[in-house]
Image 1: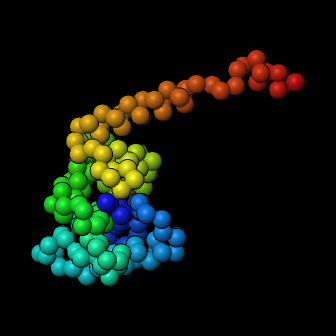
Image 2: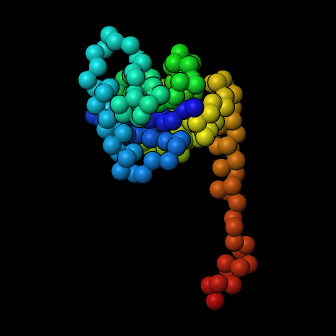
Image 3: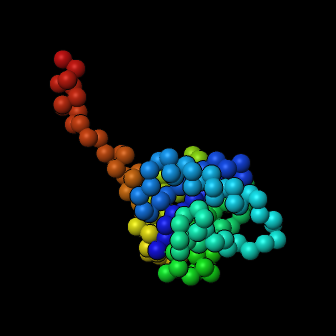
Amino acid sequence: MIKAVMVMNTQGKPRLAKFYDYQPMEKQQELIRSVFSALSSRAENVSNFVEADAIFGLDSRLVYKHYATLYFVFVFDSSENELAMLDLIQVFVETLDKCFKNVCELDIVFNYSKMQTVLDEIVFGGQVLETSSAEVTKVVEEISKLEAASNAITLVPKTVSSWRGR
C-alpha cells in the first residue's frame, strides 16, 4: 500500500503532501521535514530507493525522483514493488507534463486542484488505480470540461435575482 505521496521543491517547501493513513498535521510536517532532510543529504549518483523505517516506521520504503527543482516522493510498504513505484512516479510526471505542457513548479502552485485530480486518478486510498498516462490525461480533460460547463450554469434564475433587487 502507498502510505504517502509528496512533491517538494529543492528548498524543502512541500507543493503536495498526501497521506493515505491518518497523520496529525504536526506529524505530517515532521515527516515532510525528515524526508527532505534524507533526500537533500544524498549524493546525485546514488540509488533512488531509501529504507524509510526510521521515518515512517517498520516496513516502509521510499522512492523518489528529482526533476529540475522538484522532488517527487512515494512512500510505501513491502507489498509494493520498488521499480513499479519508480515507474508510477514517471507516469505521474508524464501526465502532469501532458496537462501543463512541460510542467514546472509554478504550474503546480497555481493549478493545485488539477494536480490533485491527476494524482487521484493514478492513486486513490493508497491503491494504484491507473498506470496509463494517456488514460489519466483523457479523464482529467473530461473533468476539466465538466467543470467549465458547470461554471457556465447560473444557479439563480434571472427572475429570482430581479425579485431580490426590490
